[in-house]
Length: 74
Image (cartoon, rainbow, N blue to C red):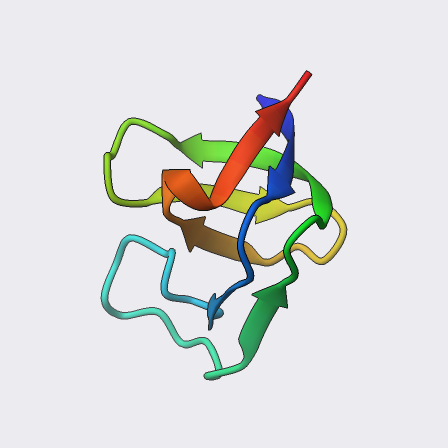
């Protein structure tokens, strides 16, 4: 499933933190999304009240974001 989302607040994190197993071997490269940025994403998990997990289809980065920091676009 793919969505288009808009980032409502600046958001950053570390690549690999959204992978649900502890033995991943990602570098500690960071990602950052600016307020107002629009992304097309693959949806992985949106049933958690704390973190939703997507893959940015432009960069290929899998990231987690609190549900109050983005909105789904039609």
